[in-house]
Length: 403
Ligand code: PEP
Ligand code: MN
Image (cartoon, rainbow, N blue to C red):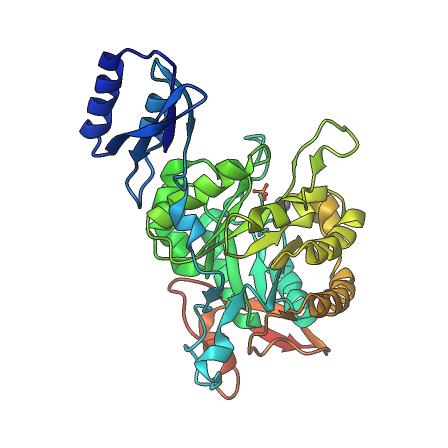
């Protein structure tokens, strides 16, 4: 950091500044050159960890007129890897999936495009199973769904909690999708990590530092959503919390910021994608569902997200949006997913990306949605499908043929 000292600053003050720097282990050197009568001081900061408190103290020191800091406020963010690799929990659990390990990985970053879809919240096994089946059939890579819901009103549906998460895990495995789900409370991080492939930290928890630390230490990759009024710097520092706590990989998600327009209370800030690119290497995705709040606006903005350079999109979908317990008005219909798939693959290709492939065995056309059955009767005739992996204590599913 370079400090510009006021002309005529008493030598005693310079000495005290030197002591302060020394007490924090910083080098202190008064430069021989002056600039417009100002004496210049060079403060050598620690190379790896910035100390924002010290920088603020030195800057506000009486007699320091201006300062220029060269310290990177988020060094871990700046040097994180650009590709995030997610290995679904169920990959490798099944002999059926004899594909080479790399084809079971989801790669998010340069050259790849991630498509996440699913309901806003898990409501019951039927809707979740049907929706997930359509998501897999449309070619999405990951299933989303909330078991712990952050709702503005305490009287709104709060999600099914643990039961909902176990349902999600079982359905995701059964349709061959990786799973992302939100964790709201640091005490649930372990449980949500055990049953998902990616932990989601929602917009309203972007600066829940206790949650960031716990999630970062879980050893699980994290999808961090931008707060509705968060600056780029705040978002990057929230990401720094995760990485500093040990997070092995993360991606950020733009999901709209608050606007002054009552007809468009949430403004999807696609400009943040190229702006963030200047500061962080890891994947950036866009959520046009929460970012627009209206079904008719989701697909256009999903397409625009690809052009803005996003590494993926996350959309909400529901088989019966009118019955959804949250965010039905922004949920795409299953048939919209097919349209979106076609658009995304063409646009992603134009951007030099391919839709992240994942070897899976998703339900074919003509197959019914998943049916909830007790595990004992879920075994198919060859003993394979419903027997794939186990989530202790979870219900099991069988896919039934239409009759
Ligand atoms: C969600 O993705 O389920 C969600 C609640 O979104 P957000 O945190 O962006 O509001
Ligand atoms: Mn939602």
